[in-house]
Length: 218
Image (cartoon, rainbow, N blue to C red; front, side, top):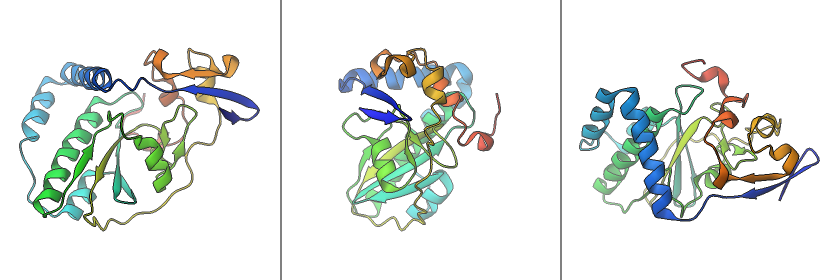
């Protein structure tokens, strides 16, 4: 139960059915990506076979929008390029994770990757604890620069990535715009059930945080 400006919200998370989450969570972005640009879809598929010949730190600096560490877990931020769901950001994030995993292993260290759909790892919560922002009423990580319009990946490793981290405590301001726009009407009913999410993305679109940095405005 979370209290937001005198509104108590009961939060019901997604199913822990890993196969179901991975199947639909991977299939839908892939279909959207293929529909948006078949050529870019094919490029991403072939790109997964290639590992850049650069250092780990240089690769992170060029391909991740932000990064933070908590213990031996690293959380990477990959921002969207638009106000609506960005399948290209999803593809870039998965490509980044495959490449950074290979680079760390190449350096002689174990590396356990966690993609955006890993039900065994709550990346938004870890990101918030690591200082990448804070959580929205929907459990989304709200980055102070990019807002909730981002994809998260994680890497568990003892390798010291030596990244320049800038901890942040800002992010969601509890403005409640997302609650009032949600078709479930949690502001009235007091319940957010992610299992009943209609994928309308209104909670992303109405968030005022990070709107100005989206490369494409809608």
